[in-house]
Amino acid sequence: VHVETGQVVAAGQPALTIAADAPREVQVAVPESQLEAFRGASAFEIELWARPQHRYVGRLRELAPMTDGRTRQYAARIAIEDEDAVVDLGMTAKVHLVQAGDRTLVRLPLGALLQRGDATYVWVVASGEQKVHARRITVASVVEESVLVSAGLATGDEVVTAGVHQLVEGQVVRRVGAMWRQSPKEA
Image 1: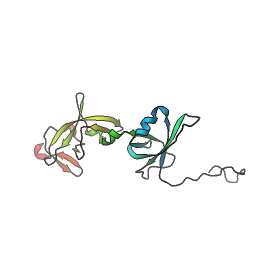
Image 2 (image 1 turned 135 degrees about the vertical axis):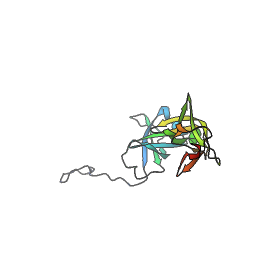
Image 3 (image 1 turned 180 degrees about the horizontal axis):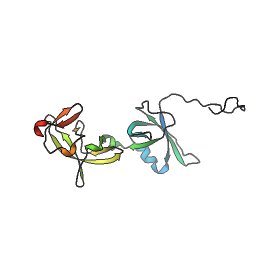
Image 4 (image 1 turned 45 degrees about the vertical axis):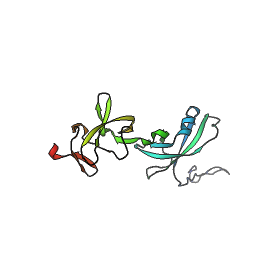
């Protein structure tokens, strides 16, 4: 609402703005130096400043054909594909580009990592054996309390996320709920 109660307004003066309750989008300004990377992105990840531990999936909906005359940047709109009740009008967000080869990124909590010298490992539970084996991984980036892993894990790998410093190679573990725990007979 742009006016006060009882205020005299001129003809054509906006009195209020109504926002459509449509799917949410993020509006960004793309500098010319980033335009090719932006166009080449296979997807986008949206991180709200109010909720930095969660990333939403985004899709490029619109990219201006020419720059804004004042800012010399391209206007773009990224549609949020998996929005929830947290995403609200007027929120501030970061947009991360996902390149075609990056789609295999796996997000793990920081507590799942095991550092040995310059190498980073995770404990993977061998299918059918319930034994853990150290697997070397490549960390692409760290985001708050989690990491994005770009190499070393395959689809379907089960990773131990708690108590990683207490495990040894080949140790038998058992699943408790969604977690694996050290087996009492192997303790």
